[in-house]
Length: 286
Ligand SMILES: NC(=O)c1ccc[n+]([C@@H]2O[C@H](COP(=O)([O-])OP(=O)(O)OC[C@H]3O[C@@H](n4cnc5c(N)ncnc54)[C@H](OP(=O)(O)O)[C@@H]3O)[C@@H](O)[C@H]2O)c1
Image (cartoon, rainbow, N blue to C red; front, side, top):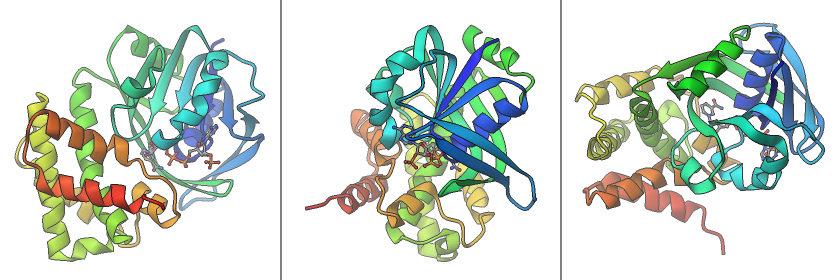
């Protein structure tokens, strides 16, 4: 039987761990310290308890290793990756943004586009919706999909994987930037000027995508604005929560990645350049 490890007992990692555990797989959820987490299904009384092992204590080299820490936390797990992997381990990086794999050189790794919506508060994870991981289609990911058929993790393999990456990047770009910088929730979309800024950011994201060979249709601006319009007024984004909790945001992998691509292609992206500068400035400390 294959062994599964999940590093990061947060919103995404715990839901992946729970899905594998419910499917009867041998899975180890790995955190900074030993303990437990509880995954609660939003709006129901359903919950599942999972034990967590300390990353420093785990001795297994896993066949499949899901990495679900934030992009900003990758450096902290690097010293442990050698002992948690063997020559044929497949790593699935479950994070928003892009460019992490180039920066961190994780062997045998694929980055998933993550559609799992949840929030961690202390040791309780509220799972709102979805269990979807989108991966490029190849022999390794096809085998993984076969291997985990008993779990309710929805692994979707796509030949147009890069389109999926860019779509999610652009969705994250606008809403994360405006909520983090205003330190306010989706409520701000009621202001027309904020909506216009979002549209401009989406448009600039599409221009960068096109320079990278990913061509979206013009109606995508409207589509994404429609998605935002469906957000409850009180809903925050991951960057908003990180900003108000004083945590480091995943700027480097969303706005930073897009900014670098924009410069590489000599594009004019004034809104992106502005929000990226202000986000960087917001993290500066004396
Ligand atoms: N939450 C969502 O709805 C959602 C949706 C789509 C994509 N994503 C993306 O998924 C990724 C994970 O996000 P998340 O929301 O699951 O974050 P999260 O709830 O903060 O979970 C990250 C977990 O990793 C743990 N961790 C950090 N450093 C570690 C280390 N060195 N060793 C072991 N564990 C460590 C954290 O522990 P501490 O709490 O002690 O730091 C935390 O439990 C991010 O890239 C995010 O943007 C999230």
